[in-house]
Image (tube, rainbow, N blue to C red; front, side, top):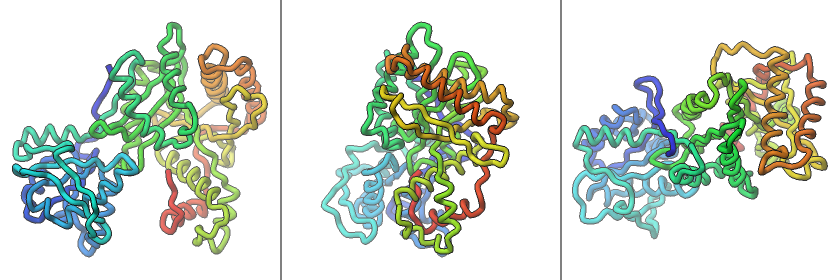
Length: 451
């Protein structure tokens, strides 16, 4: 069976968000639904009570729909003939064409002979040649029943489920259901066989005598995957490795990333109770390139930078580093707080001929008082990453492995450790004020940074 749990957090904090679309005539019904769902920690926006004074209605509506997990429609004759409702549904479906949220659900206020509505363009209200039949979607009709409304609210809360065994049908279905989410988060995997590799590694971990157990957790909203955490946990040792972790765009609010990590933590400790934190890789920001742009008095015109691909890639890596550090993750730095990227081993059979790349080695401690790393701790960390993690994944004993690979990564580790011995520590990288302002400029004036 696929192990699962509801995501929980401190009492009173919203853990999911909904936009409540309705005709003016159904305001009282909408208010009852809002009160009932918010008691279940679902934040609900309805414009009568939540539109800030002086703000544009349509701009606010757009922003709220874009940042909601659910799009709820109070269905009535008035709603089916409402231009505003048709425009709001049009935007919700437009968003769903490219991402997981918002999830559209109908709330039936009274019996209807038909539940089809012709869609409208959100921006100008023009009719579209499309209809949406709510009879084909999930709907809820017992809004006036307090117990049913409570259960409906609970069903909207995010849930974390785990692939527990490759021999179980429900685990296999969960893994397959999560594949589009994984590829949306990591599009670089699309042209590779990495999804098959992950399943192969999950199978390997179930073999007798395996030193590893993989934890593959999926955060879902209404059985719609919106987040992935895939980590490899050694049955002995103090570190786990985060292979892939992310929350899809539109579902990153409400501290969702931390919630996913914390819900996976007990599962990790079931495998190995002494794991002190998760080690993971991050892209290296091109700081010299970005510092040069930041020093330019014309930096506010970022769209004029000639190499836009390099700019977006560097801003993305910098933004991710800043976010990771904000949530307590640390990385390898020198005494001045400068980044110390580590060499990335090739993961192909041609490893001896492949050029080396580099990445940041990040560490997320489970406990906030984890007081840093001694030289012995760093040696243990490098041994875990190179000799155990890469060595076991691609060494001779693995189904995905290559002859001579262990010796290859051991040489990389030895050479790098010799180079940085006495210089490296685990801590917060220092980012200049100009770089932080550059991220603000990019957020406000573009280019958009796709995390």
